[in-house]
Length: 302
Image 1 (tube, rainbow, N blue to C red):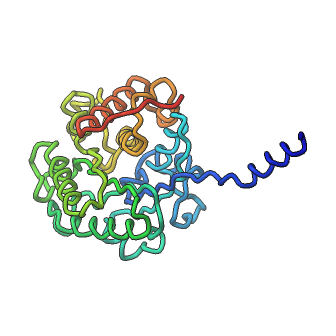
Image 2: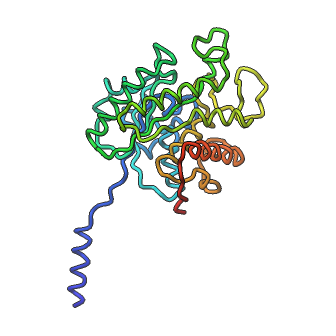
């Protein structure tokens, strides 16, 4: 009888299916790979950079690696994370030049286009709308159940404050560009034929940080020196604060876990020189931004 039980147990072990991780792909540009911040090379070995290493043999961690660390901290380390990023490019480029890398059966895809909606025609969402639909169609052809989240990015201060800033945002309120970008992504989602699962309102969360007095509203003056500066030194890309917020919102949307549940267990903030008080404020911004879009949350597993 004992031999029979052992044989049965062994057979069950052999027959048991292997654990299948959830395959996640981040598609984007420098706003995803964390340009001009300590996030860019952060824990790069924990994610798969689909581009070859640079001349120094380095790969990118960026926002995807921050996301990966959050899932570990939350006890949901079931995500196999990859990224395909090229600076200054949108979905149209990835479809034309990186299709080999991204045309696979992914479970979840998180992506965004160029920061001004269209580099050649700033503020015009037409290219984003058409390329988002093409991206969604390609992804669904490989996996009809794929979840495709798009990220509406932030206001670029360099397009608002300098005397030589171009139209259409020169001299507008600092929150206006993010609102316009959000509207463009919402329209692209609506016209995707159901291909976009949801839009992550990152730019609106930046606006909330500014409106609440948590973040500097103008990096070109000295008035907000005591506040978090969400922009990097070029007033274009994000700082570690901005990328941390981006990763928190991606984490909350993809996993359904409240970003605030990471308080007290997160080490990423310390690694990025973000204080506990600042981290908590950014977690609250991520929570509120997603909740405002109707997101409901579950608690972390540990």
